[in-house]
Image (cartoon, rainbow, N blue to C red; front, side, top):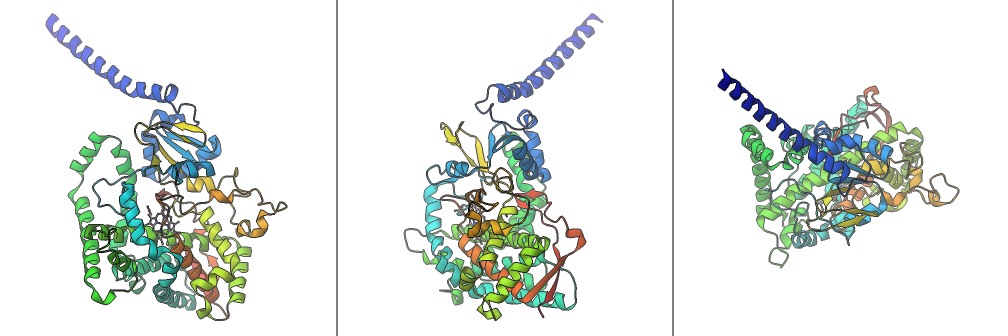
Length: 500
Ligand code: HEM
């Protein structure tokens, strides 16, 4: 009896010791992070500093960006959203984190992926890839792609005309996506995704959207190496198979395009990359494939998102819609006068509408983070930041901040017109330099010139030919969306009419 009692008590002691150790392993980091960590003075949600899993849970649930916007309203221009993570909403932070002098390394997610211009850690590799791609993304390069954009624009507007004639609502989110994926597919792989032809999103493209939803899980788990290994071991075979199939399909498409002699000297993305063969900047076949892939992901969804947001906000702002429609119809007599070049000159209000769309609904909702390397400290916007801290400027929190913009939650293109800089303008104090939807520095968006050309061309042709009549009632609050790096866009149902 006594020995049984002794056994129980020693088992009890073990259990108590394990419980205390577990408690300490949770409590000690929390106490350190709250009271002794170098970032302890930076304001932010204490619960997220104590329980970092809450931050990851928000990302997995698609509410991280919405919560970040609220935290920035509550705590100010810098918020500690995790023990080792700061979110900023200032121009100084753009310079100190992303600017050419700071040039902090990017936080990467997929370690095993082939390197492309977006995920190349090595600055020399990144620089080589940028040099190869630069010509096609110059102003001249972008304009040389106009025939391809026109081809798909014609297809899009022919489809919209059918909806208009039948007086049916059309899902503009879907149609912008079909259009931009067809355009970029053609430029990268020499073949489109049959999107506009079939009226549905290609499985290859859908796979990309699905991957975005998994990213926050991978980011959360990557903080715990053991959990990462466990996740990989337990990952259903079907998930791995679907990813492998996606990669194999991309490689097939890229190989087909590389072998297609008829597209030699076509001046598309692939041609640009292949022209570097034999030079000291040459890309390997793997690098060409990886870059084709990333160009499709980075170059389609982003422009489609921006265009969807602009159409939505125009429909919610009848004054702006009437003014941009009138401007375009006065500037051009015929549809074929609308070009990438002519829209750069003749429709300043349309350019303001695009810029305001990028402010109020930036395609990247949150931030693409950088980190401070081991054994270094950096000063960001006056804050001394220790090694291994993740940092970012939060696009949507910055651009919708009342500290930086007058009437920030309203769509007001006038804030981008020259008159807004005059002292008597209510928008005089707007912090326009803060709006950097294409990011800043050596790793900013290489496709921004093409994107701006493409967006203003498509938008001008849309309002030239169609009256945008109304949004379906269920789309009244379309912009209230979750986000998983990209916004989770629901259908944007719009009624159109061909102009009389
Ligand atoms: C409205 C449209 C677009 C927006 C808002 C946008 C936004 C961005 C942002 C914010 C980054 C920088 C990420 C970072 O800081 O690390 C980026 C990078 C990039 N974008 Fe875009 N983008 C758009 C359109 C395009 C287009 C049309 C293309 C190509 C056809 C493109 C290709 C790329 C590439 C390749 C990178 C990686 C550049 C590098 O790391 O050196 N983007 N984009």
